[in-house]
Length: 358
Ligand code: 8OZ
Image 1 (tube, helix red, strand yellow):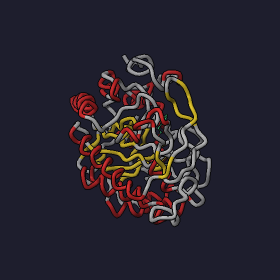
Image 2 (cartoon, protein in one colour; image 1 turned 45 degrees about the horizontal axis):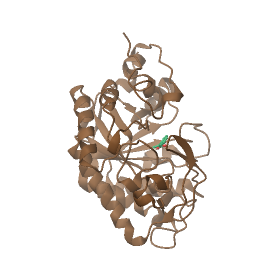
Image 3 (cartoon, helix red, strand yellow; image 1 turned 90 degrees about the vertical axis):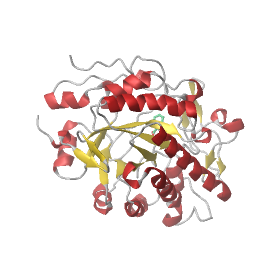
Image 4 (cartoon, helix red, strand yellow; image 1 turned 135 degrees about the horizontal axis):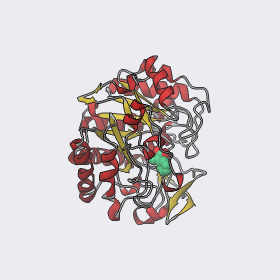
């Protein structure tokens, strides 16, 4: 079947084989030291026919971790583990970027340095759970980051970016979505600060834009993307005026010449029409590529590509169960169903054992 999805696309210095992107997917299978599981080499390698792979969210520091067994990108051992992943994907002609993650208040003291409180823009606990110690637990009460701690967080992003390049990644994606640290600063449901990082939109957007600038100075703007989710209620976050906020943020990202914005349209993993929001306005304002995500199937992907509302389409759950998603869509072949019980944690089952077509 012909479709724009199968056309090559030039993304910064990379020529992607097609416009299908594997969305970042948390799988909670890291081994000791938060090193990627050796199985991740097969897992990502099996999916290398996507135009672009985005890794699961990977914490930039111990402070940035919020769930058990997620991989990091702050130690030598983690870099060595990731190197095996990027080598395999590159051997198979794929491209892969690492998603840089700081969870902010969505964490638990048991994961934090010295069992301290998670950090946040303000000391407001999210009404939500995280997965720790083999079970779901309420997130811990956070403490507000001091103004003089913010440069240290930005430094953590820079070091993590340098590590990602050392691990052989083609670039990085900043996780600015889903109610984690940068989104907590941006949206006013979690940010009640009265300093330069709180109050008006320009102040709340400041950390996301400063991190974007710092990361792009290390990786190059043409190898730096960002994920945003303007209206998702994920992780108990809301904003009083998301359109104005994200119009402003996207203007700033456009000025920084980041290579793409990756937009979760609607409620992450849920309904696309949860709240009114004009995504085409973001597309219009943005100078770089637009990756559309959330609930896309082949039909919706084609509609959006044909009407030029996106450059690339990110598929999440479909990529969990279909390593050869692109080949299957090309042939109109049936797709494997996914098994939710093996999304988070575990072994090869539901991870590397989904079959490709014969
Ligand atoms: C599912 C479970 C835990 C974390 C996100 C990184 O929503 C995540 C995540 C997803 O962005």
